[in-house]
Length: 405
Picture 1 (cartoon, rainbow, N blue to C red):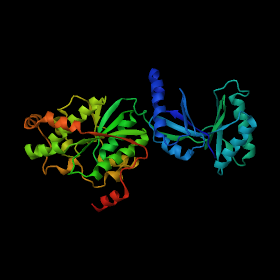
Picture 2: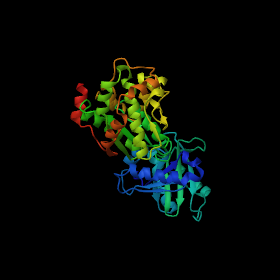
Picture 3: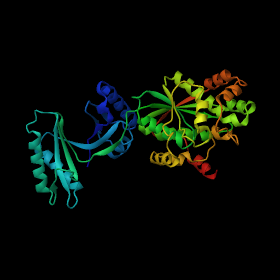
Picture 4: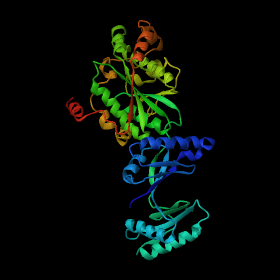
């Protein structure tokens, strides 16, 4: 059927009390951002639900995009009919008949926002239900757990009919929990951490460290493409590329091999904090999972966290690898994450990194370095890319190249 509107029901927003209006406004903004390439849509976010007027846009494509926007419990595509009972009967019967199967049960659920309409909810339920029983042979009424619920909403500008309820992404609207930086590598874990952060309402900006000529342009584009994979949940994400070559070369020259990884990660965390403070971020997220690699033991985390007082949040810290992979597959980042482009964490990885580094030793080795100068030069040369839904950074030639590695 040619739907005219999508009616959106909120999830956790219903519990937000005095802040409810802020949450709803943010969700409306996020939906508009996510639907930026559907110019005819009109999004109206009201207190009890949101109405998206399609105005001829493809309802199937819009609904696929809508499924990924956090803060939505579920939604229903609907058809607007004139405030004429005979016309409502005709469209309701057509809607039910198109979905009918042998032995199917149904019920009518009417809601009136316009209480001046000539019929009340019970009268409309009886009229429409009786008409459908007469005109759709074999269908039966069932009040508890029917196969179909035909929802009828009477408003001032028309009567809206819907028969499907499609689950949304749940969670909270991105941006309602503040802004944070995500330390994005090219691997499996950090995009999953970003997804989980956004689901709890965090507006994330990606911080990616790259080290040319040791890391390639393809590796940088892979990180941007991973960011693009997450844009449907919010509409657009800022990607911050941080040059890390000088820092890595200096650390490799002046720090013992066992502490290379620890000192590198301490610099990454310092830079992430500096960027966060500059861009009004409140926390840093990363994809560390406890015990997965040498830098992800409790001792390593403590030694690395020593350089910041800003909260460092790890959404996947207690998950095993299979759990993380399952989410990565669900959000369509896994296949891209496993493409074997090098990143700056692997190219300078020591053969035997310390799994229990000492904070005092990490501080001691950093005295050999011009920490402030290295940080300042990296900050001077960061670049920021605004990544939107539909942006692509990996062309077919680059993907073929990755297959050969």
